Image (cartoon, rainbow, N blue to C red; front, side, top):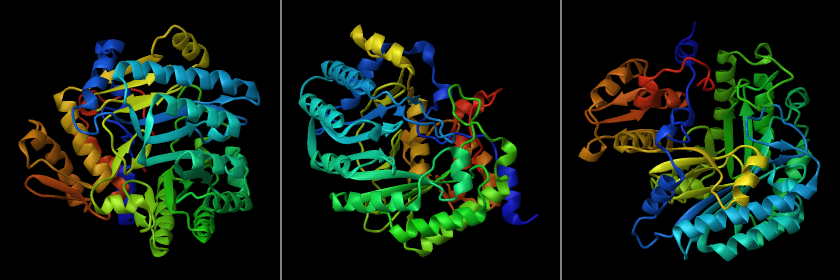
Length: 456
């Protein structure tokens, strides 16, 4: 067995992707209340000159067909009369948050996710945005983005978004091989992606991203190489090169039509990643955090050079606000001191909003230990290093954490100093594993059932 295969075999364990800490399965829901969530939001705004700056994530769950690789909350339908009632509910939910946080809210970052945001008509999306901007202003240097489907994102969509402050779009590409596309029920020719990319640039978008996934059913190294080469031909500003998360046990998950036997082995999957990464680096892309690459002309790269990258439920960003409000079914908000997630069904969402109640299903309020661990995990995920030199970043368990990392140091994946740790180049594909010893809630209560995808 080669050294690389040995490491893959050794470290291929279930683990979180750490879009938050604590991770959702380890939230303490027993001490969470809507009133406490409101207080944490008010605390999160702070007293800085930018106290009213917030980020906004809006979940638009509707899709016309099911992509079977997807683990997101979605509603499969061709009924477009659902658009306006949902928009009305979103705006009412935002109004409720405005009442909690007071006048003068300013949106620094806005992201439309899904589902398929471009399921909505241009007119209805603009009505949503106009409604939002009546409640909260936008900054001059706002970071507005949306997830686009290459098959239905039109020139009119792009022009409307751009005139309303959007400068970034990310297209879901996944893979260009027909066999893989059929397995994941995502049929889109290269020509569609090429046209969507060109149209976005013509419409004034300064950053066009592509999402690619490795480890998909029936996917081979040759498929990944072909997809990467096709992608490089279009030179998107950012590329998210994700590891497929096989989590068929999650309720409502669409991962069907294939089995684990149809997936690449962990060793094959790691080779797919290394093949793709090599091509991207040679083409001039720079690795940004976990699974993300950017050209040196992109704002995300510039933010990395300044040490200003942040990671939240919307992914990597260069616009950090302490408060992120999540609107819509299943959306998650972040006050820095707490998290809250909305209900997952349209029926429950509409009912609670109608009653003038924030449509929450669960949440977590961070204690002092959580806040310290959160900073360390964010540092590792954003810059591949962290330090506890300053007293406010120390916890009693630090010596135990370092001891658990010593084996990874012996394997050449991390460098440990007296009061810091840095992930090596060889260790970057294993950054989720590096975070695991810091995850004290998981360490104290190891899961007895399947919760997370495999780290490799």
